[in-house]
Amino acid sequence: MLRPQHHLRWPPAPSRPSAVSFPAVPPRGAARIPRAAAPPLRGKTSSALRASSSAAPGAAPADSAMGQESGAVAVAHRDVARALASEAEARLGARRLLLPSSVPPDVAAFRNGAGNAAGSLDVRRGAPGSTIDFMLQSSLHCKVPNGAIDITTLLIFLNTSTDAPHFLMEFIQGSPTSMVVLLDLLPRKDLAFHPEYMEKYYENTQVDKQREKIEELPQARPYRSQSLFVRSSFSPTAILTTIDCGQGGEGALEIVRGQLAAAAKEVLQIWLDSCVDHASEMEDGERESMLKRDQIVRSKSIEVDLTSNLPRMFDPDVANRVIAEIRKAFGVQET
Image (tube, rainbow, N blue to C red):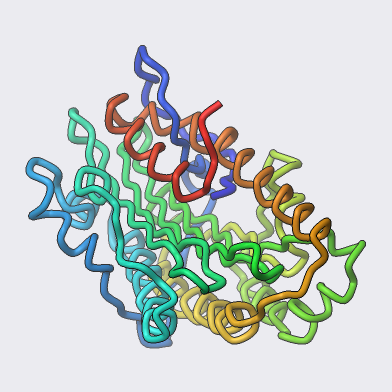
């Protein structure tokens, strides 16, 4: 959840600080998305999210609350994320690598008192003996003075039984035609210091071809986070792209359901095939160094990302509940 810093006008922060932040989005008109010839990906939400509307009285289901305002493109990128999560669950769940969700109903689906923001969160921990640490799915919709923000995230992090990269996908939509795309296998080692790691997970898998395909789109331009730390955390093959479809925004759905969906599905397949089953033999010192790096990335992500913006969207008690669940998943204690 290493999120970009953009320039939307956020709602004023509540008087009492909270702790979850989501990526700010590009200015309106900064990113736009076209429609695709490829068939749309489809998927189902996890059992925790499917049950959340009935299990949490007064908490609107994320899809219904968000869909009223976010538009077809936001719905499309949530569909893509669901399809990928469903595919990951099918592969990992069939081998009993994931535990059932234990997210409380009031975090699985949540909204603010004013009714202008709604979200969902689902976390599934890895089963004992698996390489999975956790899989996190989240959606967020918030109306802001100049439009709305829609953010969809899928993270699958591995534990210290392997040094293989984590999987990250995030769509950040700041207008009906604007989107930032973050899609990567997050490295867990210094690639310059470990060229064999780059060869194994990035060169041999040819994952860079997906970045090339997206960057060839005429509507795509490179995205650069203002945070040097965020930029240093991604791999050289990461898809960090702003999609801009212009004034009319024609074809926005086509890119989401077509090229972006195809690229995301391919990157996930590479990760499932090349990373999940690769337990790594490491010296104790090497494992400790990797764990320290993981913890720094997670802590910094929460510090930069989570504590800045969520309190501007949600009431403090809601924000605190959501932050606590994300901290638990990340294994990061509040300082």
